[in-house]
Amino acid sequence: MLESRLMALLSDAPLPLREAERLVREAFETGRLERAPAERIGRQLTADARLRDAVAEAALAARRRWFGTVVTVSPNVFVPLTNLCRDRCTYCTFAKRPGDPGARTYTLAEVADVTAGARRAGCIEALFCLGDKPERAFRSYAEWLAAQGYAATADYLVDACRVAVAGGLLPHTNAGLLTQAQMAALRPWNASLGLMLETTSERLLQKGGAHHAAPDKHPALRLRMHQEAGELRIPFTSGILLGIGETTDERVDALLAIRALSDRYGHVQEVILQPFHPKSDTKMRGSPSAEDDDVVGWVALARLLLGPRVHVQAPPNLATDTLLERLLRAGVDDWGGVSPITIDFINPEAPWPALAALRARTEASGFELRERLPVYPEHLLGAPEFFEPALRARCLELADADGYARARTPERSGTATEAA
Image 1 (cartoon, rainbow, N blue to C red):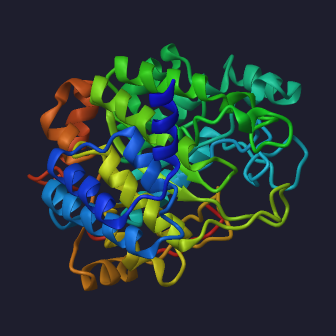
Image 2 (cartoon, helix red, strand yellow):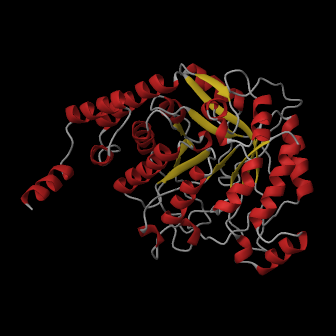
Image 3 (spheres, helix red, strand yellow):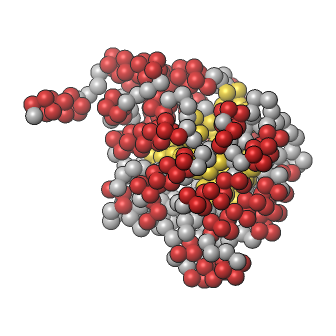
């Protein structure tokens, strides 16, 4: 009993800078940072600039050792197949109900039109992002689906992905919670799938929490989908949200949960560190944005926690004017999908940077920007078992010898627009 009390006191005590430097140096050398030191470091990241700088320095050294100086980006078109959603997260403006202004479900003909325009603009990825199980919440939508011959949105999504592949793009789908059977049906038509874990905090499911009215945000369900994607050998994207009410220890727990699944199945390509920014028409409109220091510190800590097999991504359109360079110095090695022709429908208030400007700022910081497919070279070239042969062959047609996107000249230049 005395020993456990002493350990509790030590874990709550401020971490001396010298001790923090030793811990992150060990993480750099071994590729592992464990729970207890990560929690102690995390509690001081935002307030202690010297500690944060030490973590960022180690994270930058680690990313240079593990990934060199390449920073990747995926030129994409954002296709919100349907923005109808049964969840009501208190920070989200994407989800709509039938009859709401802006509610929309794309027809397959519209998907084909968007795909054609995206190919002309030089895009590689079709990012399908849609609401969770709207057919279970809205009878009118379920009836519309049935009239098209589909029992569920996930079935309709398979055909939308087929259309995108036929049009020359590689789909990456984030459709919320999917069953293992639904993921298996999508696998032949997707280079990768994704699901933001967001958090492992069950507190946020309680009344007043960010996920109280969002049954599909239960951490156990989302972790199960991560596991099942691993069992199916699907290249996978995960991520956490910063600033929706989670604690420091819960952030560490979420990152370690993702790492454990990555260690077991080898399918997690990347983890997104996405900062919360309040939107004026949501219940969390009065909540503060994630601070830049907080984002930088957690990007760096995530780099050390996740180790050498997982890329760390930060969305550049959610970064303030001075944050991009700080993120690069904190271990970011991927900017994610950036569209030259469509807005970010999840964060419509945050325009994408122009790809040329993003390249200039990345290279001015001493890094090389390379365009990638929705799947990273490590999986595409080194793990063929993660693909259906026909889809892998299509990916290889669009890749260069290093597994990055083959250089192509767009037929026309595009600007981000909601029209697509």
